[in-house]
Amino acid sequence: MDVATIWEWVGYLASVVVAISLMMADIKKLRWWNLIGAALFVAYGLAIDAIPVALVNFFIVIIDIYYLVKLYREPQEQPADSE
Image (cartoon, rainbow, N blue to C red; front, side, top):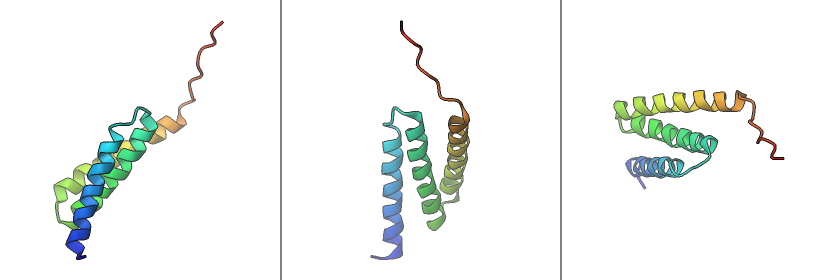
C-alpha cells in the first residue's frame, strides 16, 4: 500500500468519524468525536497539500477544544427534586 492510498484512507476515516459525531445526542461525546475527525482532516489536508481543508478543520479543532474546556469547567446541573 503506497503513501497516497494510506492518506486516502485517513480521509475516509475522518469522514466516518465526523459523521458519527453528528449522530451523538450527548454534546460532550459529539465534541470529542468531532475533534478527532477534524484532527484527522487536518493531517489529511496537510498530507495532500489541501491547505483550505487543513485550515478549516484546524479551526474546528480549536472550537471543539474551547467548548470541551467550557463543558468540563461548568458545574454539572443536578436534576430538580420531584416531590
